[in-house]
Image (cartoon, rainbow, N blue to C red):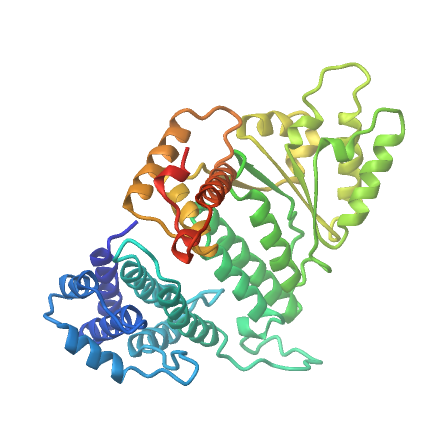
Length: 446
């Protein structure tokens, strides 16, 4: 993760790219946001003032911070009504340059990330995140986020087309449901880690958008199988990404209904002759118009027992896939090496799946970020001692992991255990003030 200085330097590089004189504006608006968030409760600590001064080499005092906050524009509900000038300038410049098939303003989102990171530093300055400060920061960020989404969607659509001029330029924005698809892509970009997966998704979506554009113009295009293979260990986001893809495919008209139907060997294989084909047909029918997601798909073919019907399930599924080529998509998922054996078990399998996405294990920093996100989402806070202990525990999880290590799910179980321990501690005290209800302490971590 970048330091705040490194993140600000990224902004400088963006300004240079678009030849924008915004350095002073960036500093001013970051300071104003940080000061307002810190002062929202009517007080500002020495640590918060020092953080602002150290970051921007300034000499603000308590009085100058107070005066700045009085000038900040908040409406009667305490909402921030204005978008930072620096965000507007970069978004307009990037939108003007935007030539990609999916118009996501990545550089503008880096400016957003800078506001978010500095705001998070301010809210954590005293070692305890105050809920009212966090909520005001969230309102700042929501205003910026909505502006970026609006800018990405700022194109007039052609409504009620009855005929198409094949020689007329075609805009990506002419595609129905483009707005909804962009929101899904933003959600994917906001997920922790998964850098290579995100790149694969962007590439895949660009391909589908171009195919949609060609289809709208009436041009012929070759059939392309959309069935996919997800390889990776448990808890690396495979099911989540599959669900997002189902929504994207529905937006683009690739799938009619866009539901995700999850299953595994037990949902496909029966114990008697004839029953397996019935089970496969039944679950495939549920997935029609959406995605059939088969977890640990290699379990269908790894049994050597006589009378096992796993291969029958595979054969039946392949036949359904061939007969319904445009009606649903199959994603098979599992550990990398067993999935290779699975795809080699039947000559027809590998030829049906032409897209492979690898989900790598999360790093220790990414797993900590997931833990941190869970705490923030559920209004828990903690000090540096807890942070250090969590980091040690996560590193120990990674060092001592076995084949069943579940990445993000391990962190969720870890978080839930801490919450349970915290509850036991509070109840044992006989009474708990608000501070205790919101705070995780070292003794809550076993």
